[in-house]
Image (cartoon, rainbow, N blue to C red):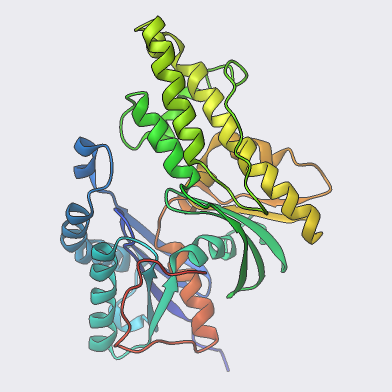
Length: 338
């Protein structure tokens, strides 16, 4: 007797991207993302504007995902949604829609931790895409989080180290703002860095206990460096933009990899993965790819690096297999931990 396929609708709305994805037995049928251009004028995400945009986008995005996947609503076995961490207003839109959809369709509801979703994106079933085996280490780096996570099962994860202040992605974006680069600044800084000399300027590395990170001091040192140089030459940034970007990017990646290598040595685990928005950074991907034959390195496809519902759908798929469902009374948790 042939087993019926498992079809999951995934919803991601933790920040400023509204996304819906359909997954069938681990394979992505649709992954639709609606970006929010409204934040460009402010140089960063405005939470109230983000939640309003989610309200406008979520139904059209879900409708488009279902049509693109070639299924009907009645084919969906369960709905998985991001329940945290993230912006509370944004999370409320996604969770409210998901609960209403599950109630109307009489299907199970599955809550997903956003950061676990980033890690489990590595298990999306695609051709020519290798998956890590347990245990492995995952460096999760985004605008809000920087963590080294030991992953021993799909939902058994231990944070070995994390930032004690700012995240790596925030450091990229804030430095980009100092350089008057357009929002979102991180990818633009990366693009300029590829044309610059990464050894031109030196910035200090923070001293933090354990496997933890700190990026607030780096942002401050870059700020004072720019102020000092601009006093001497008002055109300093314009004349040296690529070299500044390359030097800052190299420093941030150096800091990330120093602690990751410590974690590898302490755990003896040689399978390494990256996840989160900053895993799209060209320098980080290049440096990890050159780790050598002693390590297995897993780098996600670009479309699964930034916030997307495919990672929520695949997480929901594995929770569905475990019959791990949640109740209608579940509330979003903006500070949810792994």
